[in-house]
Length: 160
Ligand code: ADP
Ligand code: MG
Image (cartoon, rainbow, N blue to C red; front, side, top):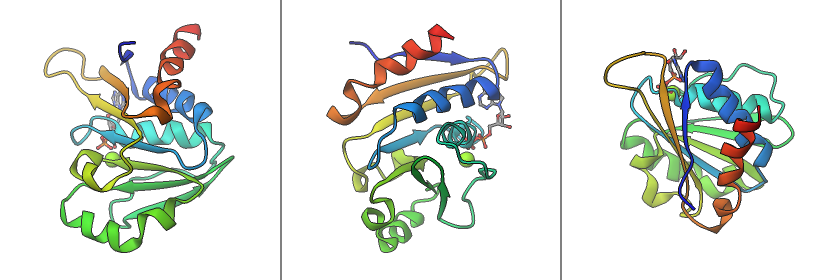
């Protein structure tokens, strides 16, 4: 099956994609969200957190490497926007940190080698021209964990 290609027309629609992903999340899942600065990675994570029932505001973990939230599942949100953060992340003990939680990593393509290989990859892209509120949201299962679930995201969104 080809990967679903989702387009959103504003931040709320990107949050809605995150909310649908949250409904499919299980403890131990890893979601890697990549894209340029301002592409909407944190916005997507806000929707995912809302979908997990987190009622605190989700902000970018720019100064703290990882932020933890508690909803239906524990959510660990990491932002690796510079390569030197990779080392910090590894020192933090990623496996312990994210055990039985949903681990969401922003800008994860920088650290892909150190992340669990089997994850949901979410790539956000803004258009180079045209409507500045448009985003392309590409979802891809890198292994069996999300293979059967990734198609359900697009299906759930078209049903709305
Ligand atoms: P990142 O974490 O990738 O740097 P943010 O989520 O912090 O990006 O910021 C994305 C910005 O773009 C926000 O100000 C958001 O309101 C805006 N925006 C406009 N349209 C969209 C869209 N379709 N999806 C996500 N964000 C959007
Ligand atoms: Mg961000």
